[in-house]
Image 1 (cartoon, rainbow, N blue to C red):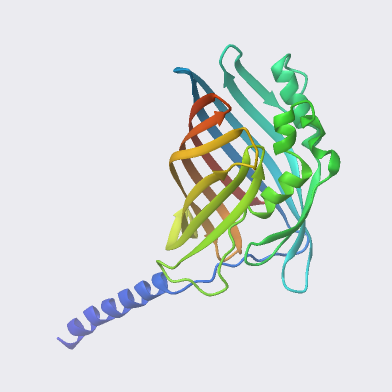
Image 2 (cartoon, rainbow, N blue to C red; image 1 turned 90 degrees about the vertical axis):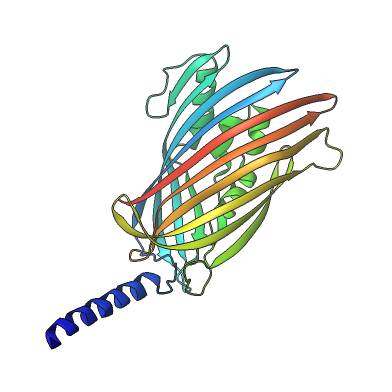
Amino acid sequence: MFRRIILPIQIVVLLATWVSAQSAPVKLEWKFTAGEKYAVTMIQNISQSVTIHDTPMKTSNSTTTYMTWNVNKILDDGSADMACTIDRMEMSVDIPNQGKIEVDTDKPGNNEGLGKQFEEMFAPMINKSMKQVMSTSGKISDVEIPENMFGGMAANPMMAQMMNPKQMGDMVTKSSPVFPTKALAVGDSWEQESTSDTPVGKMHMKSKYTYSGPSKSEGKDVHQVDVKSEMQFEANEGSPIQVTVTDQDITGSLFFDVKSGKLHSNVMEQKMLMTVKAGPQEMKQEMTQSLTGSFQRK
């Protein structure tokens, strides 16, 4: 009889211990070691439709960027001084009246016309190292980008404005979520805001991060953080171009490996409806975008 009572009590204690372990506050913190290298793969898929005078024009674009993160040294505060190198880029774009264009920086010289222009835009970016400092909370600073890295964009004025060392440095600095210094319990949230200059004005981004607790990603034990973002544009003074976001849904999740102190993977989904006015002309743009990333030790 006594033994039959003890067994249920043991089960209750074990369950209580398991629940406590699952819901215990956890600190999300990057851990760096000098000399370590990571393979970072980013996949971006964009589908958009631009309507001018009731005539829609649809395009789609898929870009995969392969990078290597190389931790050069660890600073006194635990931050990592690292070099980020673009090893390879693949792009598939479907443009009306142009058909599908395939570009792979590992296989140059396979295109003519617009495809060749894309090859020439990407070529100077390959094997160039961007320097940055990343803190244990994920804050990126001291970004240095080679001046000639985006030289291939010079022939395209719009791309030259978007992809230059200053713009890219600003983008990289604001690209990483910064974790709170305290341990997080399930349901804890924090906000992050940023403003970036773009060719059509200032882009304001406000994101809310919520810690969702232990999770699994590709069979690996990770901790999940969900994100919900809002984006708005502010036209430059005197600019003839006005961009208004009329509807949007930007959500995603990141999966952090606490044991290794590294981001394991992330995913972001974005749906937006925008109205673009350029003088008397008005365009309606509908865009769907997905962005996934993976981080693997080399």
